[in-house]
Amino acid sequence: MKALVFNKKLELVAGYEKPVPARDEALVKVLMAGICNTDLEIVRGYQDFRGIPGHEFVGVVEEVNGQQKELVGKRVVAEINCGCGACDFCVKGLKNHCRQRRVIGIKGKNGALAEYLTLPVENLFDMPDPVNDEEAVFTEPLAAVFEILEQVHIKPTDRIAVLGDGKLGLLTAMVLPHSGAKVCLVGKHPEKLALADSSQAGTLLLEDLPRDSSFDLVVEATGSPAGFELAREILKPRGTLVLKSTVAESKELNLSSLVVNELTLIGSRCGPFPPAIRALENKAVDVKPLISIIFPANKALEAFETAAEKNAVKVLVDFR
Amino acid sequence: MKALVFNKKLELVAGYEKPVPARDEALVKVLMAGICNTDLEIVRGYQDFRGIPGHEFVGVVEEVNGQQKELVGKRVVAEINCGCGACDFCVKGLKNHCRQRRVIGIKGKNGALAEYLTLPVENLFDMPDPVNDEEAVFTEPLAAVFEILEQVHIKPTDRIAVLGDGKLGLLTAMVLPHSGAKVCLVGKHPEKLALADSSQAGTLLLEDLPRDSSFDLVVEATGSPAGFELAREILKPRGTLVLKSTVAESKELNLSSLVVNELTLIGSRCGPFPPAIRALENKAVDVKPLISIIFPANKALEAFETAAEKNAVKVLVDFR
Image (cartoon, rainbow over all chains, first blue to last red; front, side, top):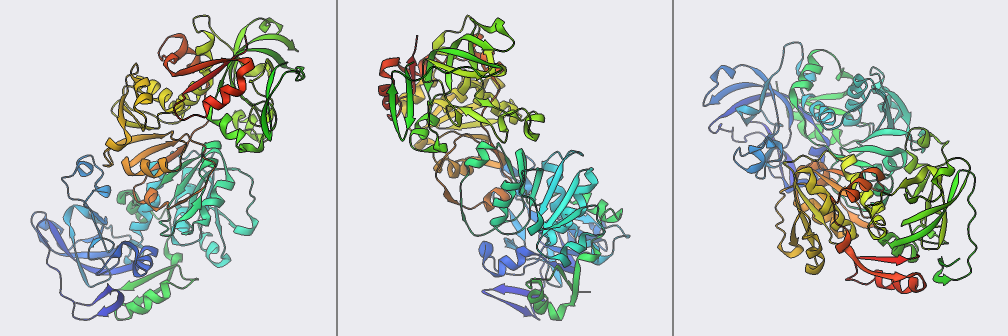
């Protein structure tokens, strides 16, 4: 099968071995896959991953090893964390934090930038017909946005700043206004901020943001350690900072302002798929403006290069 | 009046001018005052404070400028943050975070290591008779412990680690077990850990602490940046880290583990006085074992030196 493979360098391999589903796994034929910042980080060495990257996708179940054969032929998306099911965290419902977890395209398991991948059946979710393939690929990052709402009680009277006009920032700006709160997306790129026009969020160029401790909640999605310092400046005392960026680099930080201003910091990663699927089905968010370009599978390498460019938003690869 | 004064160096001044209460302030004669780690930091330059340090005390109201003359003669303790009453934070009930706040003995207002101090009447709280002067001095640090319970919902099934066997760690270990949770105080000093014997908390030497991500909540009260790293190691995924130390020094930190493990960090500072006063009155905590030594006022300088020694816990100064 055709697959994008990372092994010190990224290559498009034509004759990669088609995977065989293990017990309670499904073989899924990929229809469309997306390239995420984490994929770009992986190619730079993040998590020391080797194999097929990619964790944002929609596909069709071709085979099931074990029960639930009725899934064959279904169009599906999938949660990316594969728990062992037996450790103390898995037993307590923290499967996404399993001590031995594999994460598709990120850690210990091949990902979706290929014609096929295998996945635990329990990770699969039916994708409703009204959502087309291009939109369905956004389920995983959209779920990561809904994780914020799982973790934080957002009040309709809150003032929220979303820092970063990349993919995650834009999706966040589309979802959070539904809580009733006043949301402002802050970024450096007027053309990216404009992509939030169809949302209910306001937008502001970074240089125009007042540094006056007036926000109740800040979502840090810049992907840069500098976002953390900015967030502290614009948060009210007792405000909440949601950290979404997994920044590989360390930074000299002084935590005493957290104590003095009694701020709350919440690390936030993968989220629940059902609300993300509902939001796409109900057209509560319109993700189409975020698609910069769709490459055919034989140009998957070019897709990666384009995704790394500064003005790119979401780059998709079509395996149909 | 007699006063301990910090102006580049700390001096005991015999003839310091007795303060005059401003409008809506009370003149309070100090009975007993405590020395806190923040006082030691101030002498090292923290907050660039000049004047009389000290913010843990009990005293008697001698004069009131304005209403509430009935306070004269009462034994009182006092909240240490003096808000302007007019800024956006004060108006929203965040007086402790007032943009122009003065903090007695810490910022812009003389403190309690003197025979007299002045305070806004609204900061005063009656001290009930069953609490003696030595115990009453603990109201302020005890209130800081109750702030944790204001900020975090502690469940009876939680496993809690308190890091640091100093004054704040010990007080925390005395209060948190009342929530029903299993609390373990972790420290380096067997003789300090032993002071928690009368509490319901278990104790553990740092070297015996398993690094196995098994705590739901960690309270960081070591006063050292290293405590932060340790807390991250022993917290479960989605666990909560309460930061109590205002560590002046910065540290190289990588926040990505916060995101990956979805930890919550909560900065926690001053707290509510009424529950602290009730806990002392009801003997829910026994603070007496924490008193290392009581110095008379004319040996206040020596008291400061003793408080800075490694094996000291709480050092008091008697102004009666």
